[in-house]
Amino acid sequence: MGDAYLRLQEQYRKILNQYLENKNEQGLYHAQQFSKKVLENQISPEEVVSLHLSTLEESFPDIPKGAQDSFEFLLEVMIGYGLAYQEHQSLKDRQRELESEIDVAANMQQTFLPSGIPEPEDLDVGVLSVPASKMSGDYYHFVHDENDCLGVAIADIIGKGVPAALCMSMIKYAMDSLPEQRLQPADLLANLNRVVEQNVASNMFITMMYGSYDVRAHTFQYAGAGHEPGFYYSAEADEFEELSAKGIVLGIKRHAEFREYQRVVAPGDFIVLLSDGVTECRTEQGFIEREEITRLIRNHMHLSAQEMVNHVFHELEKLQGFQLRDDFTLMILRREV
Amino acid sequence: MSSQSCVEVHTEWGIVSARQAGRNKAKEIGFGNVDQARITTAISELARNIYLYAEKGEICIGEVSEMGGAGVKKGLQITAKDVGPGIDNIREVMADGFTTSGGLGAGLPGVKRLMDHFDIESTSGEGTTITAIKWLR
Image (cartoon, rainbow over all chains, first blue to last red; front, top):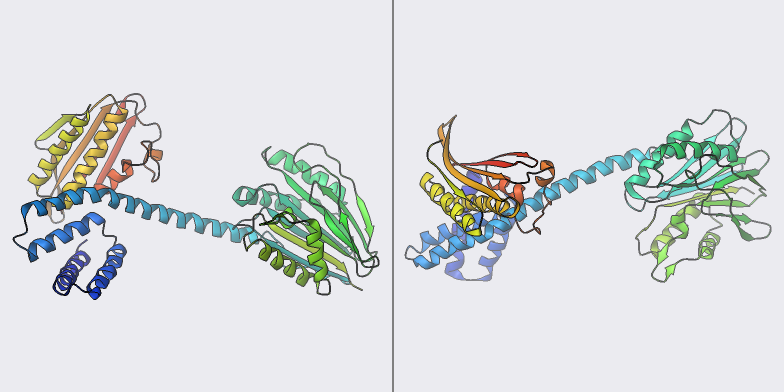
């Protein structure tokens, strides 16, 4: 209140009297502009009613008593609106606060993901990870080791949003604290499984695929923990195959063993790893088929691995009407010709 | 505190009497029409809480004064006291968006907004005392 209120009072008197004199649209336009101003100054509705009454009493000293009293009545009715308005304001502020907290957390989470994409000789790597909302339950990771092997991990926390993101940060720390010497994919998963089983609530599960690409021998060894199968493209046959690895989801059994698979990668072949946000993309017609993904990849096969994943994402995004329902992560490793 | 008048609340009539007592006192102290309506709305809310959730309780209205920088300032104090179930989680009932009565009332956060000072004490199983003051500007 105070000065600002007195100024508004003065202005209201002026524009109301102007309107009563001319009764034109311009006067009403002033009223609309005034309402913005009172909202800006957080003047509550009951105060506007009181403002109106006092202005009226000045302009029409002989206003009937009954009409005057009716404003007291209206004022009482408006109190509730005033409170609802204030509550709305305070809830809006709270929401803004929460959103900015989540923004900070989302930024922090971004730093958990690798900042760059490895560029080993003869191997073209592309990756894209996009959360459905601000925070992601998907995770990917690259590990370079001195034996010319590139380790790649892709994980999907079942669920999404903040709880999934918290769980994802744990996976990152768990991976960082694995022994220095290189672990075989199956051993690595068994190790992680123990950490997850001990540290994560029993209703949270993590699926994961881990592979190790030997850049000198061009072999890809991999193991999976209940993760969405990827694809293997063979250049010679010009065909896509499922790249699946049997294994139990992380965090269910204390002692789990994982099977290890190996592929010899020929020039031009590529490996596609993904999260279920890619395959469970839903359009108006229902879920898309996995063949749809391979078709999209094939359409962009002439591009670099990074351009391929970018294009596939943009087309799937368009198919879904620009609304992601689940976190999306797609990774491609191609042996260059 | 000078003259204080108390009204027992166990019917809706009690709510109206409490409002009336508040309105009279507010006029006497010199509050304008908007603040009068705010004070009576706060009284209504407090009285309704007693009526709905406690078996017995009363609303007391009185004048208070305080020495301030600009001399003595006058105010109206509402005290709502009940012997009822008490409130287990005060933080919860003081949060916006929390209502038990179907969302129509302003609730305690509303009372706090309508008045300048708000204080609540509650013991589970014994009752609740709420004090609220509106200062005359």
